[in-house]
Image (tube, rainbow, N blue to C red; front, side, top):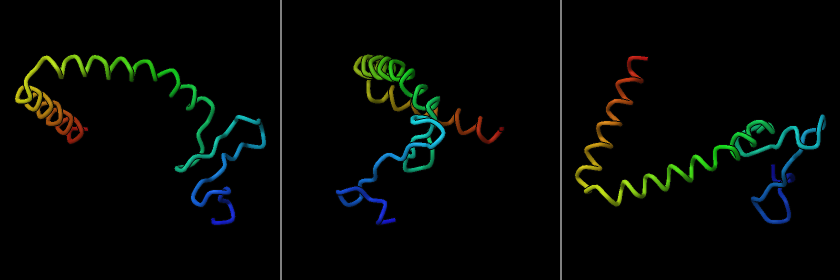
Length: 84
């Protein structure tokens, strides 16, 4: 609703749950619990490590090899989803 918008159009303030000040943070897609937010924070180092490793691998192999590996992984993922 427009009445829920903050001082800048389209920017919504964070709504906190009533049970606990930080129990629920309302996001664009619903409610995020503290556990979800903590999990995201805990997984940030994994994301950074994956980005670092991906950059190093990407810089060492050719574009053609990268495309073949990516296509194979996508095909494997598709087959696994179909069989599931």
